[in-house]
Image 1 (cartoon, rainbow, N blue to C red):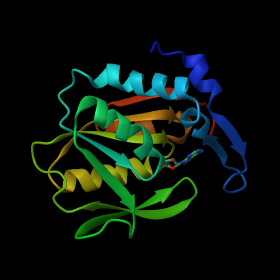
Image 2 (image 1 turned 180 degrees about the vertical axis):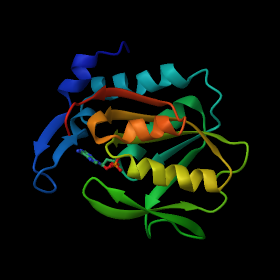
Image 3 (image 1 turned 135 degrees about the horizontal axis):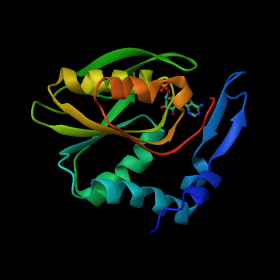
Image 4 (image 1 turned 120 degrees about the horizontal axis):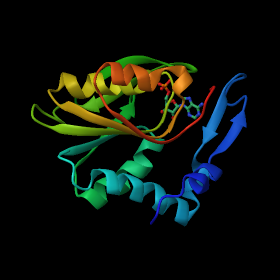
Length: 180
Ligand code: AMP
């Protein structure tokens, strides 16, 4: 489906002072409940990555899972889940990180990627970049290379996408909001 920037942005709801005062939360749940919007978003990534040489798609708990799972199905790539602490069974590797609001820890299952794997890393939104940088650490510690980061939304003023580009990791996002 032809991508319509205005239409997709109209499906993103801004919720002021949630989950904490001062945070302008960008809510993407209306995209999931709008079949046309969901298809537009997924198709935008399918068009970008259909001929790329990525071998795996990794995605971040929990909103990142929703689009990345459909993308992995469409592109016929293995899907790697990077989850919040304590959710993955078996041997895991963990990485602590700071959030725009608070701090947390991410985990990946041991041996889920290896040297030679070219990973597309997906999350819903890039703010300070702390979450994605922690995820990149987990993937690269297993020998994989992160070829690109994809997100729906970038908040460029919070500096995350710049930090990723400073590490020579290209960033592909569908829309951006100035400020926070
Ligand atoms: P960061 O690590 O600061 O780049 O934060 C990105 C992660 O936190 C993503 O997984 C987002 O889902 C979530 N997040 C951070 N800030 C916001 C925001 N303003 N609106 C919605 N989600 C956010």
